[in-house]
Length: 82
Image 1: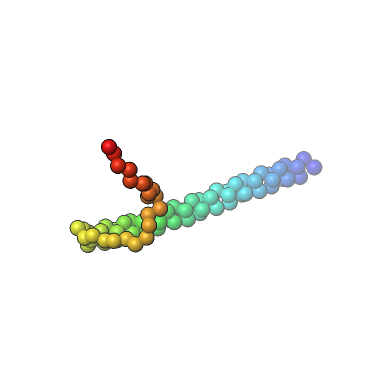
Image 2: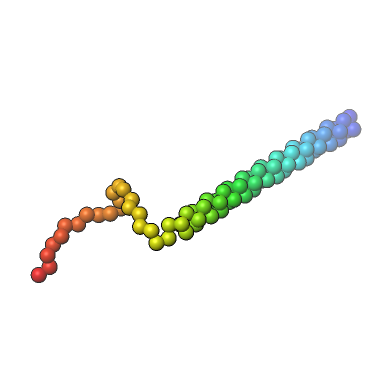
């Protein structure tokens, strides 16, 4: 009878340890996936930055007219100062 209780306790502890190991493994996989995604995003940002620098260096000293009204501008009435 005592032997069956010990075996049952051992099985329970073994199951708990197995669950903890599986959780740690899944956690490591998720962290690796997130790190890989962050690396890809950083490389994409660097590529965009390089492209913007290249286009900006092409247009150095050139004037461009942007159509459309600026949304952060405020119109003010002119008043003469006497």
